[in-house]
Length: 232
Image (cartoon, rainbow, N blue to C red; front, side, top):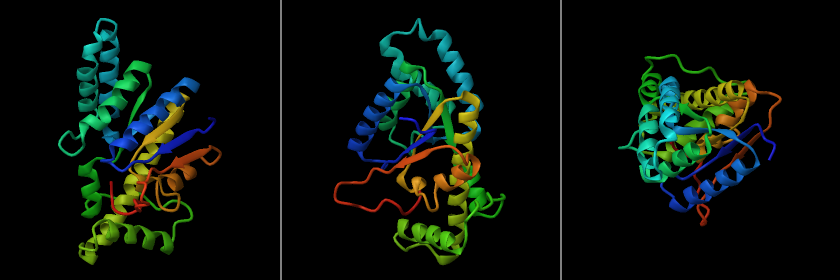
């Protein structure tokens, strides 16, 4: 295990994948520490997340094992975790694991509010990464159409594709910043679509960290479902 960045995918509601991935995280931590980044937390909440971790560390020695779940929830709240939109029971074990092992936690995603602003043309989108052209734009738009079962009006597809590209760019920036700040490898947990090497986080991250090794592993369902479309 020598990668600078490891991107681990998911189908958000697949319980088996979450369990498998947690075992991988445990095995990786046995090799050496790393920073753990989550799509489910907003990058603009990183300072609040860091303050919550610092406060938690002060009381961790006095806390009992039964306090771990409530500690994890407070950390997630500070990081902007959407308890109504995400299944907390699937992500709680990951944050508890990071607390037990003392791993840095990274809030990686563009917030829903900022994503909406980009889609609505009220905020400047991220510029395309090097090598991005018409083919990549069409692939992203095709993914958006497929993810919404072809029900989106065509005028919305391009806007949502630009917003998705901006989210991927923001995640890549969060990972690069975390690597520089902590000096550790960074492991990202995110929806499979963010891991696409042609239009997802890896292409943005490679532009920021040209000499670093990036490994992306998508987790698909056994019957071969394509999880490369849509938005997560």
